[in-house]
Image 1 (tube, rainbow over the protein chains, first blue to last red):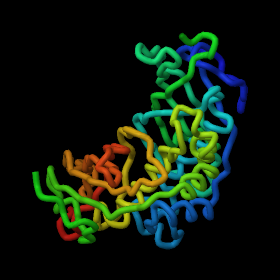
Image 2 (cartoon, rainbow over the protein chains, first blue to last red; image 1 turned 45 degrees about the horizontal axis):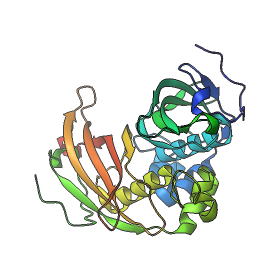
Image 3 (cartoon, chains in turn cyan, red; image 1 turned 180 degrees about the vertical axis):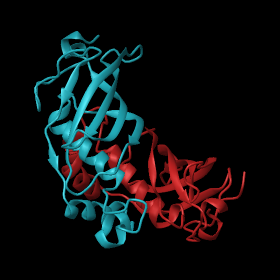
Image 4 (cartoon, helix red, strand yellow; image 1 turned 30 degrees about the vertical axis):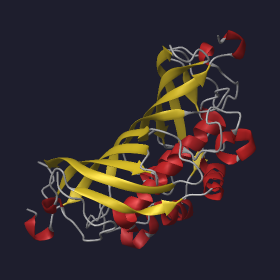
Length: 160
Length: 160
C-alpha cells in the first residue's frame, strides 16, 4: 500500500495518475452544535438533530448530526483537499454507511483509498475509479464509510 | 403490492405496522438555481454546481445539483411527509445511486417501499426495515435511488 499523499495536497490528478492503493488524507472540519442544528432545520428536522434537550430521550441519547450532514461535510473535505482530481470529484453513488453518530465536538477528516480502476470502453476520455472514503473524528473513530464510483478524466493528451 | 398511502400521509407507524410491499409517497419540493448554488457553496463548491456559465463546459453540460443536495432534499421529504414513522427516520446507511443529474427546474418527490423486515434478536424494542426510496422529478425521471436500513421502534405496548 502506498504512503498517503500529504494532508491536503492539491496536485491535480488524472485517471492516468491513479493506481490501486493510492491514498489521500483531507484537511479537517470542526463541527459544533450550531452547525448540526442549522443543517437539520433545513434538511433533517428531527428532535435528535435539532434540540439538545429533546435528543437526550431518543435513540441517539444526545444531539447528533444528520448522517446527510456528515456526508455533506465529507464531500466538502474531498473537494477542498481530500481528492485532488483535475476535473473535479464526480460520482454516481456508492455504498454509504454511518458507523456511529457524529457529535457536536467532533473534528472530521477523510481518508480515501483507490480500490479499483476501470477504463471506459465507450468513453475514451475518462474512466471509472472505485474509491473508499472513510470519515474519522479526532479520536480516529470511524463515523462514515462511503465507496463511490468516480468518473475521472484522462490526461487530455492521453485521451483518444 | 399494496396501494401507496395517501401522498403526504402523517399517520405514525411502528415496526408492527409495516409489511413488505407497503408504499409511501412524499409531498414535493421545487428546486431552483439559487438553492443549488447555495448548497454547493457550502458543501460541494465545484463549478458545475455553483455557476451556470462555467457548468456548460463540464461533464454535466449545465448547472446540476450536488448529489448530496438531492440526498438532503430526499431526507427532508421523508421526514416531513414521506415515511410516517413514530420515532423518526433513523438509518445506518445503504446503497446510494444517482441515476441522472438533478436540474434547477426539477420538482422532487420520493416514493418508498418496504423491501424486507428483520426483527432484532438483541433489541426487543425495535427492528430493522430495509426500504427502497426513489427520488423522482415532475416527469417521473429517476434522480436518486437509496436503499436504507432503518431502525424502527416497536409499538410500546408490544415491545418486550
